[in-house]
Length: 353
Image (cartoon, rainbow, N blue to C red):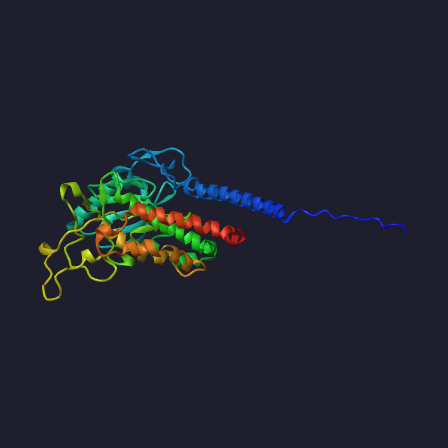
């Protein structure tokens, strides 16, 4: 009887297949992490947000646009001769603001409106000169005798108009959870800079409500944040026992920190001399509310809020000493951004592993 040929099918052991799949998956995760690192590194460094900004000039100098060389800050004579007002674009309690032109560059000319507030105006100029950095609007020139300040122009204006800007067709692609979180990171970076500035620990006092906070910052064309108004930045010096008070009037509402409110109840009339001073932790109290504005209501923003819940709860501690520092908040924000980028890039990886 003739035997039929017997074919044997070779099969890989299940464990061997599983090991190969796992190795390939881990390699993919490592590659993705490397790409993610490069992307975030590019965002924080090559986008101009590095700790040393190559676009900054030495103290007393500036440059605008694509110009490579730095020029000295414009003097009274140069401002009067070379700067042309185009139109008034704003007015506050301290100054009027004009869109102006200098050598075919758009600039902003600010002029004092009330001589009784000249000390506030000159304090803002002093801060602007001393704090020039990647976080602060660029100073172009000034004239103390005429109470005039010249700064770089940013066409997107203050953060008050952020949501309107994000609905312009040109910028709709920026209206995402990660871009909005990056703006929140920029904002906390500014607060961190002010709290560890070359002049000491500075408190952002022009911040009694959300609208006031947003008016103090500019949105750049590449979607970063600069602080623009530095008229009210008192210094905290704990070693010298120096704390601050933001103005001489009673502050009300949930937006300001508990220690900024009158502590003696409605039955005791407010007196500035009896109001206890406070420190920079008032800025920390306000971070969750400002960040909530930045995050908006786009897809994914609620997930970001969930990841920030613990740090925001810490910011809202009634005791200022229990609140985190601006650096701790910034570190947490950056970790959340990295984590969510990784999860968005490789959904389901945890389950596969």
